[in-house]
Image (cartoon, rainbow, N blue to C red; front, side, top):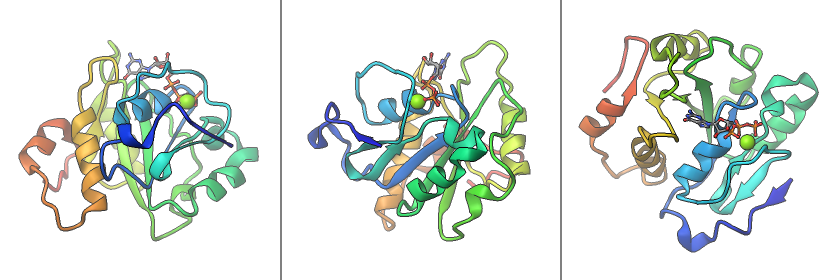
Length: 184
Ligand SMILES: Nc1nc2c(ncn2[C@@H]2O[C@H](COP(=O)(O)OP(=O)(O)OP(=O)(O)O)[C@@H](O)[C@H]2O)c(=O)[nH]1
Ligand SMILES: [Mg+2]
């Protein structure tokens, strides 16, 4: 595990905190984490869990794709309230065995469809993969290449830190989707 001194506390958006990003190798976790943090750091292969300030954690894809790392995944997420799971828009493979994300019943799991700018993106299929694996909508559709969906996801994550604050449902609707049962 390692800290990241390049993302200073002062550069963080206030109240963006307490979430861990998980998903397959190459699904875009690091790119998304850095975009949410508004960091200009280069996106590089993640070798171990990276703890940014305020309990924002980026994980290596091996944590979800290799059974030998499931223990590391579970110990990394144990003290964090929200799990952000990335499903690439060009993939129908779910990178975890059923139920692993729900081992801790008190955690919120947020489904994100990443890389929606790819030419072969199929966001509806990716949303169905999330729904089929018990991740509830709303789902956030994001691209770090175009910036689409990043601010909506950031606003939603911030809203989790301020339970009484209301966020613009209309703005969220425009940038998230579900497998047919969007609750907004
Ligand atoms: N087109 C496109 N490429 C993306 C997007 N997000 C990430 N990428 C690219 O996909 C590759 C993998 O991105 P990463 O953020 O390193 O993926 P990761 O999930 O952190 O991968 P690991 O650390 O190996 O688990 C990089 O070349 C990124 O530039 C996106 O939204 N659109
Ligand atoms: Mg990474």
